[in-house]
Length: 94
Image (cartoon, rainbow, N blue to C red; front, side, top):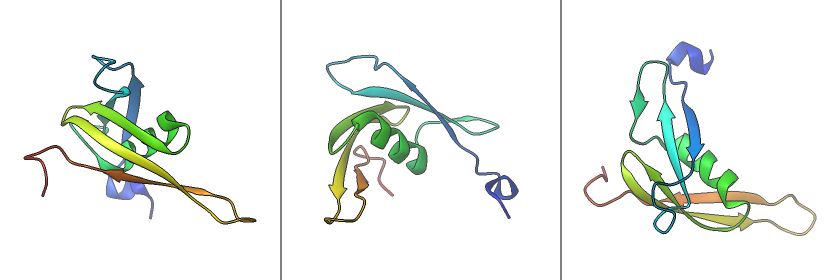
């Protein structure tokens, strides 16, 4: 089975933020049938690409402004990985 079988294909477009003082970038997230205000996997991927390394980015999306912390984790001799923590805006947490 693939993601197409589950129909969970998501695409994220990275754009300049509406207000560069408030956000690092703007993300528009799409499925084959609709635009979504927020989706986790596209947000994490966009944050890792936009951060360029460890640090905080602010993603502007349909759900609002999302602070995303990208952290580096690695040991000598092993490739480092990047982890993200996405904080949902107030009233949007489930």
